[in-house]
Image (tube, rainbow, N blue to C red; front, side):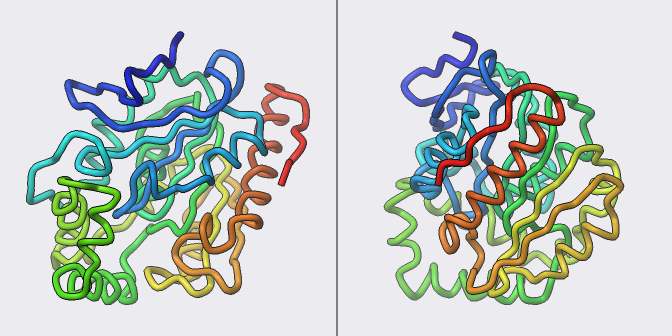
Length: 275
């Protein structure tokens, strides 16, 4: 089986990454590869991958990056280039390891940025589109302020214990590997305009109107910089995690986007969105 996984792990350059596969194999149906946020992991997607597989008929592959969840640990400090490093050095090998043939990259927050970097930096005709939830394309003041608050919550207000339920002994690596680069003054110059300009596949952006880590300016930025079509959805009463705050609407928008892409590539009959 091209996507065979050993005990819910996949090995990339000697590093074991926690993962799940839901639905058909990559030689049977398109695959949706899901990339988690800066504090996320496989478990923190909850039941959304299962619902997405059921709604689209696609295979869904979910994994925890090194240093997260039950994946191998990672050393600290992480560089400000950590998202570019994963997109360019790890993700290509991961896609090969799972037998990825065609489909979309679906990312949340940092994961959306990694998907953007990959698709804007590497010519990979297997990637037919991007679904981006609460993406970061440039650094906003609200992002830095909320990330600074998260540091205080982690060190003083119980956030570490709450995250340790999901990351175990990886919890410090997961938190500080994300938090310290974002709070580094050098990171204020980080932006993805050049990557967006080089993307040649459609994008879906789902943004919460009440996101404490970013604003609708991220959508405007993408629409200005993009050559390819951008479908954008701004959700009311929604924070930083559309898939958890507004799961039904987010699932419907994503399934419809996947449906249009697959039909456009004549890879499947129109899908029935089962919500």
